Length: 382
Ligand code: ADP
Ligand code: MG
Image 1 (cartoon, protein in one colour):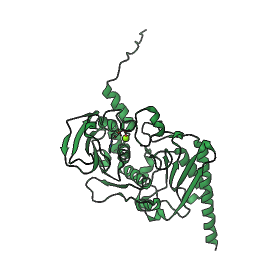
Image 2 (cartoon, protein in one colour; image 1 turned 90 degrees about the vertical axis):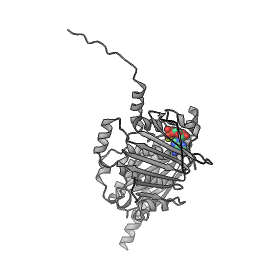
Image 3 (cartoon, protein in one colour; image 1 turned 180 degrees about the vertical axis):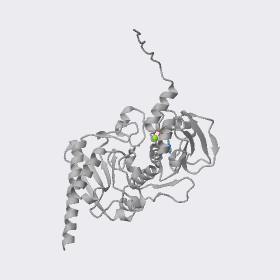
Image 4 (cartoon, protein in one colour; image 1 turned 60 degrees about the vertical axis):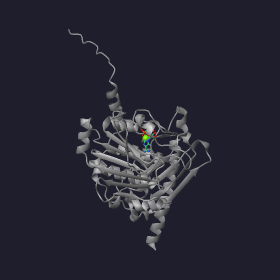
């Protein structure tokens, strides 16, 4: 009888390790857009525009008017684990930026071609440089530039045949990108966003900075959504264990979600919550955006499946016809109650006392919906 030899164990080549890791951080074009927009937000931009070709596989271009990147940092910009945001582990507790791991740009260079154009405040010209596998392909070249940074990702997943094939066959990732930008736009209302297909005159998302959340929702999702929303607010400051503040808007019983587009439903949703599509196709769109600290600090878009489900359940029970609600919700927690480091794409965070918080928000939503339902029934009987 033949005895099978034990297999030898060997070390994987660094480039293999990096490409595998990159494929987890950048799962599809929309994940790259999310990372790039978050970087622009972290750079204190007031205006962010996105252009996309071929659902993001040919080109993703994100331009901002933020603080730019220093010339002397360009050589290490796209290396793994290089960041301006975190120095020691303990900083994670009080992190105010959305990024912290220095992994996004590096990942993009392992699965696509990255070109960065940036200018520092007060400089006469900017620099442009391309990266591959974490390193610069040439010395930065001086170039004309407007304030801020522009990052271009070309040929995403050119070296991941299977991934590229699945994405090419799947319906449009552009829809997901538009959807993501809509959600950024109604959350970061002090920033202007735009999103278009590369070369197209028409913008598919266009928001102008405004102090009013409702205005932002109106300009992004349309009047038909904005006029059927109820303001919701809740806070728990008594029990020290579940301190939180929540505010947002939820759709009322008059809100009828348009038919859900099939593509967005059948694809596994890789990003925070919600399968909403803007314009006339707005569908139920529970959005939960957890702010990782008290007022005025970093805001991250994350998935909170538990909260989403809890709210959907209430809608189904209270307003069966409006069972696909529109929900915008911002939950503010003390930073030490949020663990941001639980998911490679940072799309999920874990919250302390999640059950208590979710239950409180759920019962609040329920009572508001009941009230709005009763007053409507009452009006109809008049
Ligand atoms: P992280 O965001 O976790 O720090 P990234 O790989 O996303 O890691 O970015 C690395 C660094 O590059 C950031 O820490 C930041 O200093 C710089 N950077 C990236 N994008 C921008 C941008 N749009 N404007 C200014 N600086 C940027
Ligand atoms: Mg980042």
